[in-house]
Amino acid sequence: MSVTNSVPIYNDSKYGVSNDTQVAAKKNDSMEKEDFLMLLIAQLKNQDPLNPMKDTEFIAQLATFSSLEQSRATARSTEQAAAVGMIGKVVSDEYNNTGMVTEVSMDDKGTHLSIAVVQTDKDGNIVFDNEGNMVYEYEKNEKGQVVLDGKGNPVLLTKVVDYSHIKEIKNPYLL
Image (cartoon, rainbow, N blue to C red; front, side):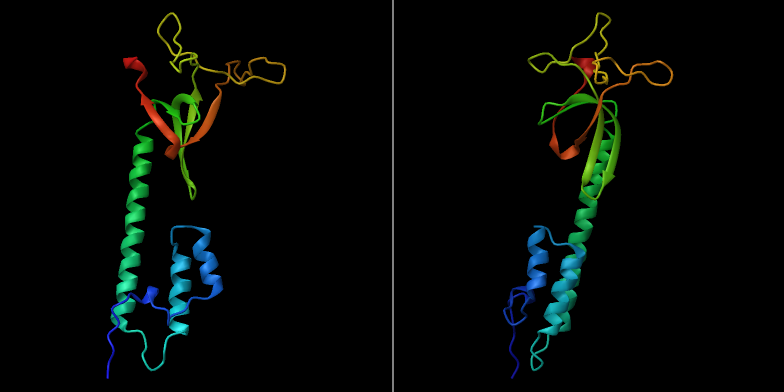
């Protein structure tokens, strides 16, 4: 007699998960490749020999995971393209850092923007000089003096902000 199991295998109690797998899954809310493989190995190790996991269930899990991984890659590529499109634009993040995006970097923790910090007034509006140019902040040494580069030019104050924390994109030419 064959029993059809309509519950997904990862929810089926007979395919227990070791404590190591549970800890790995709890570390990060999103499931990574290693977590998936550990879960799959635990399922294979703990399956009932008289009622083994069906190959169709195994293939369905792999297909689902592959689809999820592809969605993540697409989302990350979209985020990176949007961040690169911000170069030259003035942004503000949720910590009230305001500046012109000069560079974009990416790592396993996310997408980051390097900004040249601009001066803002008490209301958060960008400060312009008499010729209509944005006024930038400059790096200062411990004596409060502006730091100069090797050519004698003042060094712009830059900060790295997370793309995910950007709350506003400003076009300085329309202000």
